[in-house]
Image (cartoon, rainbow, N blue to C red):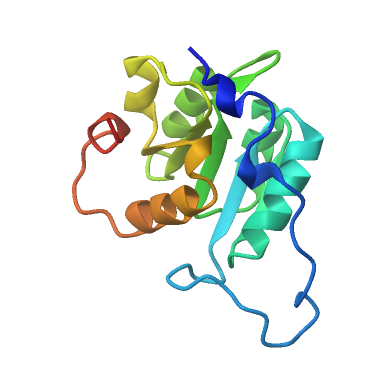
Length: 162
C-alpha cells in the first residue's frame, strides 16, 4: 500500500535552493564524504534531476540511470559507492534490478527508496537499506552512513523502522 501523503510529491522532490552554490565554501552535509559516488535509478527523468541536485548539495556525487539496463552498463564502466533504487517504476522490476546488481556486485550497497509501506520481505532481503520517501533527504544520508560503516551483516529488513 502506498502512502497517499507522499504519492506524487514529497518534501525531498521540491526544487533545490540555489543560493550559495557558486560560493567556494558552500555548506556541505557533515559525515558524508565528498567523493561518495551514488548511482540513482529511477524511471522519471524529472525526479532524477531533482534528486541529483538535492543530493549534490549534501556532498554526494550523483550518477543517474533511467532503468536497470542502463544502470548495469554504467556499473560495468565505472564503480560507485552505493545505489539508490526507486522501488516502483513503470516497465521495470526493481526486485529484478536489485537481484542482478547483487549477483554481479555482491558488496555494492543498495538503498531502496519508496513511498510504499508494504515492500515484500523478499525484496528487503536483496537491499542493504530501505528508506521511506517521507524521511528524505536525511534518511538517505543516514542510510549511506550505515552502509559505509556497517555494524552488522543482516539484511535491510532488520534495520527498517517499524
